[in-house]
Length: 343
Image 1: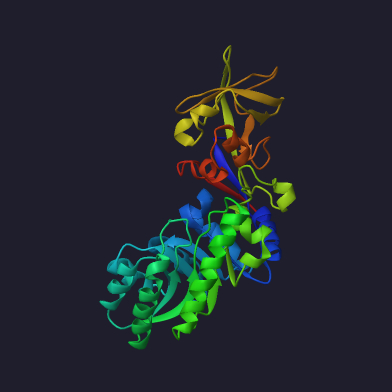
Image 2: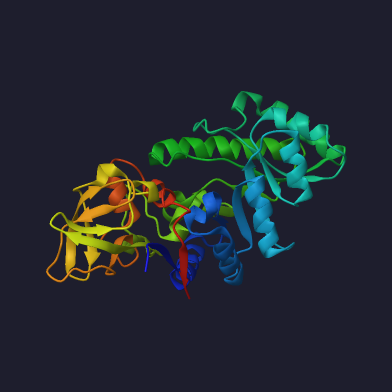
């Protein structure tokens, strides 16, 4: 045996049910950026489709096109990292929904051959992740209306990101968002969809759910740092990093994963792993191996769950020890490690 990232597809399916229940009556848009949060895009998208997911948030056109190849023509696939006219043209060709947060992209859209693009216009509500500033919103609406009149665009949605830093900040952001949507309607535009919330606000604040809720992390069982636990949210980690003992000596038992496989060296000495002999402390994380405290009958070939499903700590547990977020720990798991799927 060698190290694997073991993904439980039944746990993933249970999380999807939980997310669907939590955000209802809004629709769950499953975010699958970064290779479905390092769990494997093709397998996870296919299972999500089988479980009834019909909206996917794919971040960029390359990922969106890959999702389209898996699920076919009926899915709605939203992308929002767009680099210019080439990206827009590729997105239209792949029948993707395009998140437009820069007026320059509207100018680029005007240069493409006429073929209606499904546009979701983004208002910057204060996060400054991108988005059209409020003082430029009316100008962007006028430009969009012109593209609609020319048959180059259909305004499908109004959307934004929020900080989820405090309820007060998010309330202010929502007020800006609602005003932006009202302005679009006053300009004669009729967006079919509104989407503002991601995982945390989608679960906790019903008034933020609108028509679509973009949920990525919670779908994979990754809770927010400093927030409610997995059990409180009703989600479960779907993957565990499983290592193999490759040597046992006076320094301890040595596992076949290290920093190059995604374990931050800053976690050395700061957490325990699940071994056949019970919990054991991680003593040192090297580039390609990790030393842990030994147990009486430790032997080469023993399986150890480093973190995640079946382990003692989740990705977010580890993240909190080094002042980051669970997504960062999950996304660090190297693509060089095989993904093993449990059905």
